[in-house]
Image 1: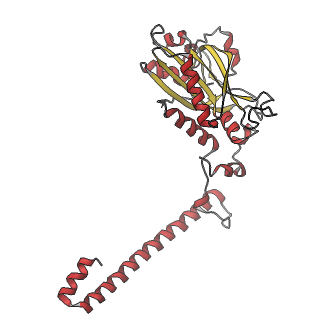
Image 2 (image 1 turned 60 degrees about the vertical axis):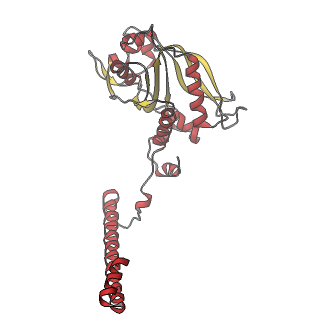
Image 3 (image 1 turned 90 degrees about the horizontal axis):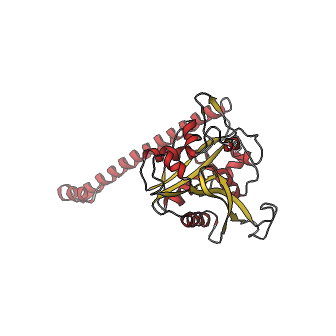
Amino acid sequence: MSLITYSIRRNFYGEEHALVASTLSNIAWNHKVRKQHEKAEIAYQETIQLWKKIYFGDHPDVAISLDNLGSRHPISLVRNQIVDIFNRIGFTISEGPEIEDDWHNFSALNLPEEHPARDMQDTFFIQTNPDVLLRTHTSSVQVRYMENNKPPIRTLSPGRVYRNEAISARAHCIFHQVEGLYIDENVSFADLKQALLYFAKEMFGEKTKIRLRPSYFPFTEPSAEVDVSCNICNSKGCNVCKYTGYLEILGCGMVDPNVLENCGIDSKKYTGYAFGMGIERIAMLKYGVKDLRLFFENDVRFLKQFDKSI
């Protein structure tokens, strides 16, 4: 009962009547709250039984708690952290289909039919003539984004990709990528290097260093592989980094002018950089996971190690 109601009853009916009414009102209120708690407990127990029936079938004696149903997968944790890091410097998210045509997955990216670089990627083809396939990288999302948006462009494309590779501790036919693209006037390789240095420090720690090694990709020129200093041995050399002091994490480069023109962007006015990394690779380095297959086996003993992460 409120103080105002109590005061009114005291004035009209006296102190004793007001106290009795107040006590009865409090009892009624407590009874109502208790009933609500009882209903909530019944709903909780019913939910528990439903989960048991769904997941454990004819084994109702299995103990289960809604407080321990699971946690985010380590791939999701790392993906979200990568996205968050690049969001801070203006990158937005773009997504696209996992089933692609030849143009968006190959030809628009400076990989015509006769280009030998097509041999670098083993592909799952759904049909041929015309070619329909499972995308081998999320660069296809960048092509679609450039076709439908004018510069300046600053986008990040995370997603699942497929390659016809033998499954091992270091390779899988399914994995996840994050690719970034920045296009504007007067974008330089120095801008690319600084963005990647920022990412490495945010992901692996302030003392992290990077190095860029010349490489080749059909859709960027010049191109580079990016390594980060090994945080296991502090760059002194160990079996993880093969005693080099560095670990490879991604590929990058300046967007080839042919790619810009294929997507309807004036390559004489605009330049840009692109980069791409495997999320599993970053997760393995961040958490010290030595076998890529663990991310796909759904072993609860493995996944429980990440319930307090990020």
